[in-house]
Image 1 (tube, helix red, strand yellow):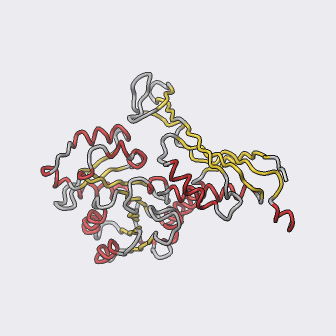
Image 2 (image 1 turned 120 degrees about the vertical axis):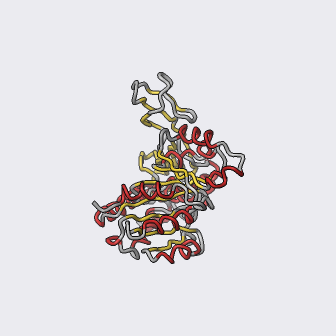
Image 3 (image 1 turned 90 degrees about the vertical axis):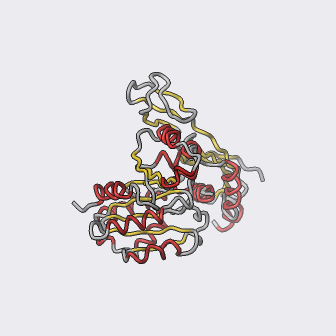
Length: 121
Length: 225
């Protein structure tokens, strides 16, 4: 259940970038080669978002397809499953170009700071 | 009150904070001249048993230190205490969301109790788990995975992240080969499918098979230059 640790980190990042505004949606990019279980992540996200500016926000996961560049023939292939293999020459010596991503891409938030912030600020 | 939505581009890695701490750990290890191995496996694959052999063989050759990660109990640390090497136990239980693996911060918290200057090779025995530990760098130089042949041939395909990130795979419990319906060639083929050509040593913590070769691997990397 490392999804809980990942969710904690996502909420922390979003909360910091929100700067007091209410976050409504968090876009997370997840590479195909990572082992993240979406349902476990969504559950953890909802849990750890409570009491932060991210509470109630939607978590949008976008999967990044895996691609590799062959070190033998330099062709780029989409990698859907193991073994990771060059589609052009059949080689196994690939440099992973995409598919290992795990980052917060963007946030959607409300324009103004939330109510109580407006009052105190 | 109606509010308009705004979008803000963030582009921040989820594990950046952990990776920065791992890098800080790594710099500390490098300054002390300590080579660090992150040892990972499923529960019960034989990490602690192999470490007992390792500590025995390396006595007087290489100054080893152990950082034990466990969800609960000090049972593993207790087994290794008789070797009188620097040893620290980190229980992950109080960590929220961190109970299934060691992260860079947990390792950092354990380092205060380790005399790194007197350790050539630090072995971090991670929490037994084939998924979570692979995601978290802790500042290691190498990742060693202990796999036991009782786990089945298909495991590299089911847990590719961990098998792919390993620099060395110890294929353990080889003494059981004759009693199991286990196809070693098929397993090694699956291993090569996810991590082509990765170094592997066939071991048995029961008979001592392969322990010399594994210790030689450690010595080549960890001996003070």
